[in-house]
Amino acid sequence: MRKRFNRYFPYLFVLGEMIVLTIIFFSSLFIAEGEFAVDKPYLLLLLIYLSVWPIISYLNKDYKIGRAVSYYNTFKKAFFSVFIFISAISIFWLFSQSESLERHFLTTLVLLLFLWLTIYRVSVHLILDKYRQFGGNIRYAVILGYDELGTKLFDTLKRKSHYGIRCIGFYGDVKDGIENYSYLGSFKDFIKADLESIDHIYVSERAPKYVLEKAIEIGENSLKRVKLLPEFKTEAIKSFVLRRYDAVPVIDVNNLPLDAKVNTFVKRIFDVVFATFMFVFVLSWMYPIFGLIIKLESKGPILFKQLRHGKGNTPFYCYKFRTMIENSEADFTWASKNDPRITKFGAFLRRTSLDEFPQFFNVLIGNMSIVGPRPHPLSLNKAYEAKIEKYAKRHAYKPGVTGLAQAMGFRGEITDYYQMNSRVRLDRFYLQNWSFILDIKIIFLTIYALVKGQKLAY
Image (tube, rainbow, N blue to C red):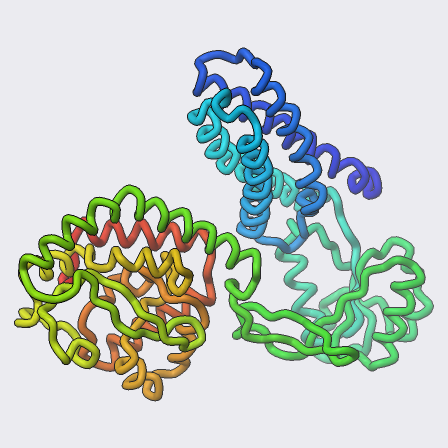
């Protein structure tokens, strides 16, 4: 049964995707054209469409849904595959009779692909978890090391039955207080045991060295997967990566989600698309109108630029619409309530946060992101970096036009340690827990806050 599942599941998975793809294609055609008739350019696109997807899905190994993988990882993998697929289809569109393909059809197709293929993937993941929870696609395991590390894993596998891993029991030295678990024998008994029905061998790092070496030997000779349970505490570590420098294993214990190239790629693509949209549909008319008002109200440039710290503490010029009369204190003195330096139109821009819109140019050139920790003036960073724990961590990635701290109401003038500490704590939380969904939530929270109005916007 186990072998049949492994053999047929990938084909069933891709077949299901092909059915979803076909439904999406004809649904998009009906929405755009009002009928299901397929003429020559659409027929050619359909053939390429149904030929390219299985290749991308297979190369990306999308059918492999891990036993301890989150639904977010499945969503992210689906998003990446759809993006590659859309890129391939777009290349065909550029070199084909583009006027024969309705733009409305292509737009609908892209939107439905992102929506329904990700829903399909997450649904399959959910069904597979339920199938494993009720006894299907099961793997059996033993644990070498009758100790705290081993019992913690045993409890986890028992609690998370949807992983589909059933632990038979332990081999190792018996210790007081943990006799309630299934005991299979000593380490010597393990060496002589019949492991025909076992798939995984988990080895506690507290087990003797010869036990690990023997487990690896048995695993290699009988195709069993051997996994090491590390001694170091991982509760305080969000993520870590094991690397190898020649023969020396090294563990990165402070990796962030945005250290992964696929995450930075997805975030950058979103940044460019969002910023381009704002340039074309908003800044194209906003800049000349606002620029004229700013020039008429006071002398000086339309844009105010200020050095701020970016990723890795690298300084860059951050752009804003000028909201003050020209003064020599802008880099050292933050705007305060009823600040005499602020112009009348500048007060409106600051209250509505429209003064920040030129930062979409910073996004396009690559020194800012749509969402991230807000960049502070150099003097402000210098004043607080020694006072607040892990302050520098907020510069681990690009600063943002908006951020979690701003969306939660922490913005404007900073007058005490508590205000800055709260901002930094939220910035660190954002970087440690980044996801594409979190970025979307922050954008909507920011829009809601702007519509509602914020007391500290001055």
